[in-house]
Image (cartoon, rainbow, N blue to C red; front, side, top):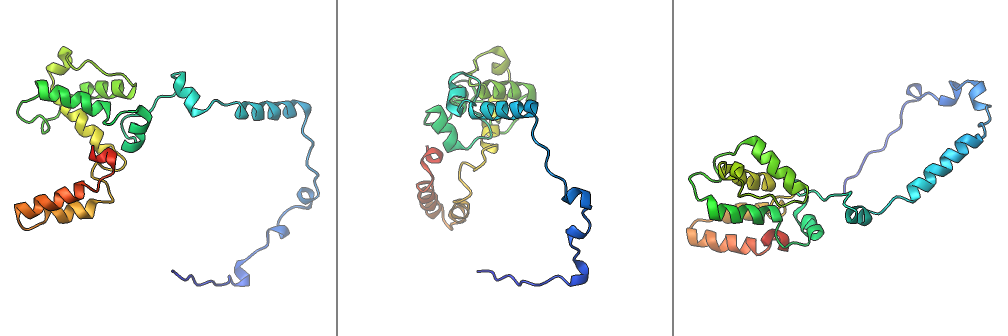
Length: 193
């Protein structure tokens, strides 16, 4: 527990507000609400109470769930998937077309990355076999990295950071492998998958 020391202000540093408030203000009676304003307040109250729920907005297609920058567990719960669709689509594409030098090292064209991001954020599954993406395979690898980079809680989680750090610092390769395996088992299910 932290104990806080309580003190008093010297009287010369304190001034009462009542001494400065004009008499006309303190004696004034609040004005009654006009009929016009009363109707407006009633309308606003009714409007606020009749707002549709988040679930209804989703059903109507008005509210879209974010993909990028959204907590992994929350995103999977909302989408009903075991693994984010963006990662599934991108990894399948890379395994089929992207076995080239530097697939996760070289960056793709920024405009292509943004196009893909926008499509996934709009709950669409883009056609990655379009020429624009086939000719810029690195944009798909860059999109995967962008997804992981924008997770509010990283894939390996802040909570397990120290344990992962200790595991990779083990003396031998065998010991390192055993320790990393042990920490991976402690990841929350969405992160583990």
